[in-house]
Length: 129
Image 1 (cartoon, rainbow, N blue to C red):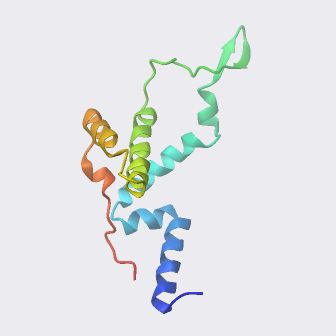
Image 2 (image 1 turned 90 degrees about the horizontal axis):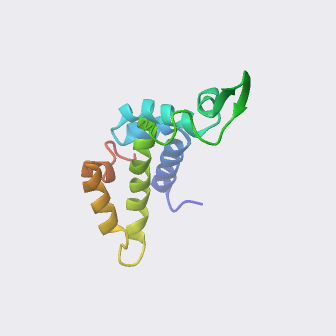
Image 3 (image 1 turned 45 degrees about the horizontal axis):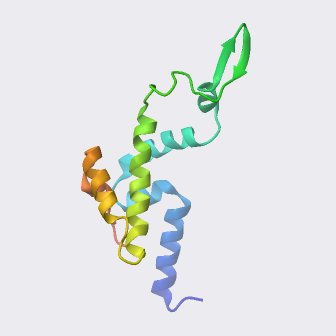
């Protein structure tokens, strides 16, 4: 049950955005993020590309390894983007906790990584209704 028709419309709009990531990034005026999301999703779900990093040939036989090809020195853009997602999550949760306990750590990490503050302060570019 909704308090009124406007509340129901807002609920439907937000539910539609959450069900479709493309709709959500458009609502925040960041539609250009969608291709990055699709690319990153491919690395967080099992695919041939993700499995390939852990397949090696040893004495003519295909084997699995726990160390990705290239070892620890192999830094990819996917690894570099992980802190951004973690900082965005922390910035969303910390203000909900008493005293905003993660704020100084988040701020320091953002500075250390040279990340722009706007990554943590995205706002809707279009109204809910």
